[in-house]
Image (tube, rainbow, N blue to C red; front, side, top):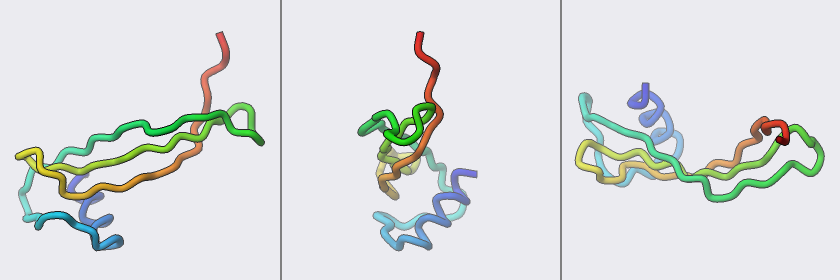
Length: 76
Protein backbone atom coordinates (compact mmCIF):
# COMPACT_ATOMS: atom_id res chain seq x y z
CA UNK A 1 0.00 0.00 0.00
CA UNK A 2 2.84 2.41 0.78
CA UNK A 3 4.34 1.55 -2.62
CA UNK A 4 1.11 2.52 -4.43
CA UNK A 5 0.77 5.76 -2.48
CA UNK A 6 4.43 6.69 -3.06
CA UNK A 7 4.20 6.03 -6.79
CA UNK A 8 1.00 8.08 -7.06
CA UNK A 9 2.52 11.03 -5.18
CA UNK A 10 5.71 10.86 -7.24
CA UNK A 11 3.67 10.90 -10.46
CA UNK A 12 1.71 13.92 -9.24
CA UNK A 13 4.67 15.86 -7.84
CA UNK A 14 7.53 14.65 -10.04
CA UNK A 15 9.92 15.44 -7.20
CA UNK A 16 11.41 11.99 -6.76
CA UNK A 17 14.89 12.09 -5.23
CA UNK A 18 16.00 8.65 -6.46
CA UNK A 19 14.63 6.05 -8.85
CA UNK A 20 12.21 3.43 -7.52
CA UNK A 21 11.94 -0.08 -8.88
CA UNK A 22 9.16 -2.65 -8.46
CA UNK A 23 9.88 -4.72 -5.37
CA UNK A 24 11.72 -1.93 -3.51
CA UNK A 25 10.92 -1.94 0.21
CA UNK A 26 9.59 1.47 1.26
CA UNK A 27 8.83 2.99 4.65
CA UNK A 28 6.98 6.19 5.44
CA UNK A 29 7.94 8.27 8.44
CA UNK A 30 6.38 11.51 9.56
CA UNK A 31 7.29 14.33 11.90
CA UNK A 32 4.86 16.72 13.57
CA UNK A 33 6.06 20.25 12.75
CA UNK A 34 3.25 22.35 14.23
CA UNK A 35 -0.05 21.84 16.07
CA UNK A 36 -2.60 24.43 17.12
CA UNK A 37 -6.30 24.59 17.99
CA UNK A 38 -8.70 25.57 15.24
CA UNK A 39 -9.99 29.13 15.71
CA UNK A 40 -13.37 28.41 14.09
CA UNK A 41 -14.01 24.82 15.26
CA UNK A 42 -13.20 24.19 18.94
CA UNK A 43 -13.38 20.38 18.56
CA UNK A 44 -10.65 20.37 15.91
CA UNK A 45 -6.99 21.22 15.63
CA UNK A 46 -4.66 22.03 12.74
CA UNK A 47 -1.44 20.03 12.44
CA UNK A 48 1.39 20.26 9.92
CA UNK A 49 3.44 17.12 9.27
CA UNK A 50 6.53 16.38 7.18
CA UNK A 51 6.19 13.01 5.46
CA UNK A 52 9.23 11.21 4.13
CA UNK A 53 9.28 7.99 2.13
CA UNK A 54 12.58 6.10 2.46
CA UNK A 55 13.88 2.98 0.73
CA UNK A 56 15.32 -0.11 2.42
CA UNK A 57 18.71 1.59 2.76
CA UNK A 58 17.17 4.54 4.63
CA UNK A 59 17.68 6.90 1.67
CA UNK A 60 14.91 9.47 1.16
CA UNK A 61 12.83 8.83 -1.95
CA UNK A 62 10.15 11.46 -1.47
CA UNK A 63 9.49 14.25 1.03
CA UNK A 64 6.52 16.59 1.40
CA UNK A 65 4.64 18.68 3.98
CA UNK A 66 0.91 18.39 4.61
CA UNK A 67 -1.45 20.37 6.83
CA UNK A 68 -4.41 18.46 8.21
CA UNK A 69 -7.49 19.20 10.31
CA UNK A 70 -7.75 16.65 13.13
CA UNK A 71 -10.26 15.92 15.86
CA UNK A 72 -9.02 17.06 19.28
CA UNK A 73 -9.17 15.06 22.48
CA UNK A 74 -11.59 16.37 25.11
CA UNK A 75 -9.84 18.31 27.92
CA UNK A 76 -8.95 16.39 31.04
